[in-house]
Length: 172
Image 1: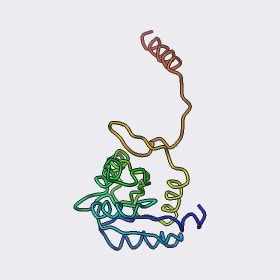
Image 2: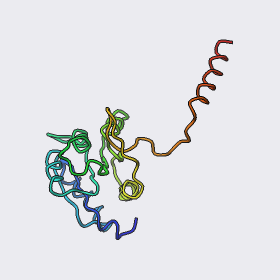
Image 3: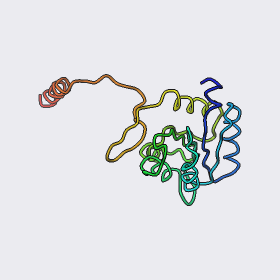
Image 4: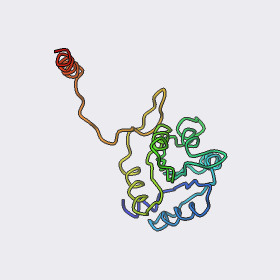
């Protein structure tokens, strides 16, 4: 990503721990990003987005009173959100599989494990901005397409024929 593109971004950093917010803001500043907004929790962040629509959000998972998952769900589904498809990067030390899955299911664009590096933030932010995944609106999910790569479609007839082959082998 060129520094010109980075310098034009507005990024909202959401974390209840000020030292972590400052660390992430310092990393963003080192990329040339000058429009950085800060919020101490998801509620403050959502209110801030009403008047300052960001190009990307970097949020923590665990915050009170509104955590990163509830914040992400609100961004994705609340009709009052001006940018429901904004890229949301979650940076957290809670990296267990169920946390990653909850974040994905809430509509998080990228999940980044702590300790975080400037290169990781740069790569994930660049990917989210320059190569956005399709945005999906389904009954039980709103967020970026979960698949990172497009697999070739297999026709239903081919799938069924191969399924029958497996059944025939199983019964033989």
